[in-house]
Structures are given as C-alpha cells and as structure tokens.
Amino acid sequence: MKYPSHMIEISENTIRELKLKANEIRTWVIKMVYAAQSGHPGGALSAADILAVLYFHELQIDPKNPEWEDRDRFVLSKGHASPAYYAALAMRGFFSEKELMKFRKVESFLQGHPSLMVPGVDMCTGSLGQGLSAAIGMALAAKLDNKDYRVYALLGDGEIEEGNIWEAAMTAATRKLDNLIAIVDRNKIQLDDFTDTMVVLDPLEEKWNAFGWRVLSINGHDVVQLIRALEEAKKTQGKPTVIIAHTVKGKGVSYMENTAKYHGKPPQSEEEYVQALKELEEERRRI
Image 1: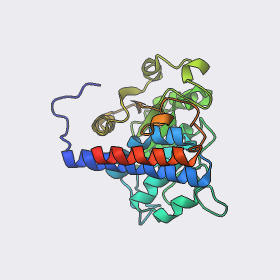
Image 2: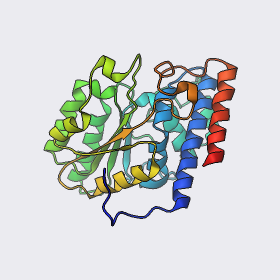
Image 3: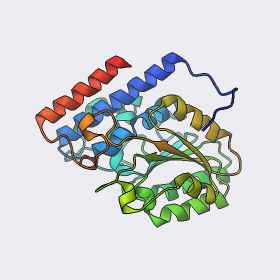
Image 4: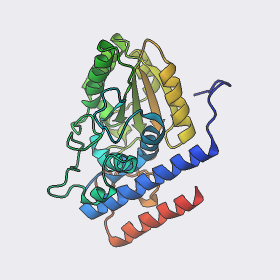
C-alpha cells in the first residue's frame, strides 16, 4: 500500500519496543510448545508481530477489567496459534506469565485452543472458518448498541479456504461493518503443504475486494506497516477492511521457516530447542 504524506509519525522508540515485544512473544512460543511437547509453533511465530502491534499499540483494552463493556474485541480465528496469543495476553497483564509454562497441561486454563476461561479471550476458537462469523456478530452488536468499539479478527490463509469465510465476508459487506478489521496471516503454508498446492488463493486481494471489502496488503513483519494499515482501516467508512499481512511461517527460527513440518510440532530435540532460543536471543540483540 502507499501512504499519504500526512500519515502519522511513529517514533523509533515505539518501533523498537514493538519489535522487542514480538521477539518476546516468539521466545515464549518456543518455551511453551517445547515444555508441552505439543502445539503449533509455525503459525504462532508468523503472527507474533501482528499480535505485538495489536496488544501493545492498537487495542483499547484494560487487563484489570477484561470484560470492560467498551473494550475493543479480538478474535483469534486461527486458534491453533494460541501460544502467541496467550503470550501476548500474559505480557499485557491479563494473567501471570508463570501460567504460560503450564500450556496444554492437565488442569491448566491454557488449553490448546483459546477458550473463555482465559482472561482477555473474547471468543472460543479452533474450529477453522468460524471466527470471522463470530467477529461479525460482535461488530453488529456494537452498531445496534451505538458503541464505538472495534472488532479485530486474525485469520489463517489456509483457513480462508473454508466456504463459510466467504459467506461471512459477504454478510459483513452487506451490513457495511466499517467497525470490523480482519487480518489474514498470509504465510502461504498450512497443515500439510503450501496453500497453493491445496487450493489456489490468489488473486487474494481482488477476491476480498470483489466481496465488498477495503483491502490493504502489507509486510506482516513490519510493525510500521502494520500500524499504518490499522490507522487506514479505522478511517474506512461504509465497508469492512481486510489487511493481507504477508508473513513467513516459523518466522525467527531458521529451521522452522517456510516449512509445513513445524505447523503442529515443537522442537524435536534439545538441540533444536537450544538453537531456536539462541537465534531469538541473537535477533533480540540486533533490535
């Protein structure tokens, strides 16, 4: 996307802080899935920058009052990316970071997919393709109640192969839900392989546009582009906005990047675990 000259300035300190938050989310993801010996690191790592910008810059929320009536709502439609989501919530103060290491353990409230037991979670998700419909319901409720909050939904690109995503997309446009912002984590890989070997999604931007949405296409690892895209989305009137965030599956851990192998597997050995943390630590020092 091209930015107008009057676009907001973003300080170097803000950019660095958000990059550090994304790095911290990625570090938690590796620790959590390795401790659990279960989970989905690939799509959690690709979404870390998006979640960092949402939870540490964008969303109007109150960790001390998770059910604040006027809060912005967020739906993690790609629920298997829960490690990154839980890390962001804990870092934001919704619950203790100590809970993160209990991820997927018996009696922990941090289940494999988000549930309403977790402070800060607005919607149970995990059954792919349904999160956008839930977000539309929330956005409609805001309109009916004359509330100013916005609703954000993070979708996976494999997920948008589901037919009900497009039924929901038509509904959102019909209802002119300009208080709804969807973000597609376009990492181009799903459970078994690259998305285009399963169902060809492109031209993706044109499809969303044809369904009546405003479409913004950005680098999903660039926090400046993420902030500015969200600012543009909030200016949109009379239609919902989708941000196509181009990302790398497994971002930040070299042996996990651009492979389906780690869609649903933790590091396979202590050597892999140590290497992942070392690479993320090196990245943190470069920020």
